[in-house]
Image (tube, rainbow, N blue to C red; front, side, top):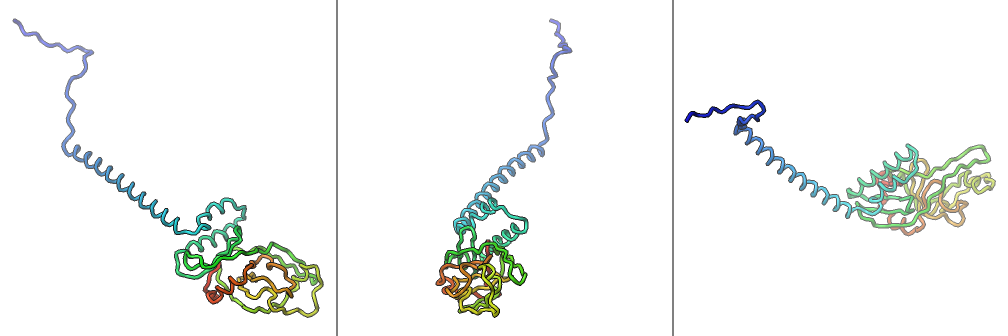
Length: 243
């Protein structure tokens, strides 16, 4: 019987086998796949470790620090004021990891806190002196803006004798005496001096013409707290963070 000859049709698909990839390429693809799996696993474990560290740090951090980013978002501040806020808060956070004594004053919560590292040793309520502009009879004008920032204590005084400035009488709408009065405890029994004339002070004595906090400054309602931390406040070394 005559052999039939296979004839190809023009529309028939090409049945030729595709060339097989070389062995080295297969091995390379396999190695890349294994490396990808290992890298993904390492990345997942690394993220888990980082997250655990964050949680641990959050648990060790005081409540006012955890609130910091939320509070800044709510504040309506000028660029300069925001810079002071950030400077004070960032340096405060850095101090939490130190082994130093320092003060923080939260003007929103109206709290003074005395820290050693991240441990609060003492806490007291404070009153913040309001912003004020005072014009005196001599023609001088004094402007007080609530202090904020990070700075060292410049000095401290107990049983402080205060030379009453002219602006105090002008603020009270009283004529200033010809000779300046010197009053024991005029600013309070305990006074902590900050830059630019700002202070942290205990309540003024009854004889003082100043009633309440000095404008722009901070008054600690509980005199006993300042007395308790007094020896630890070292001028030019102890830091104060007001935010």
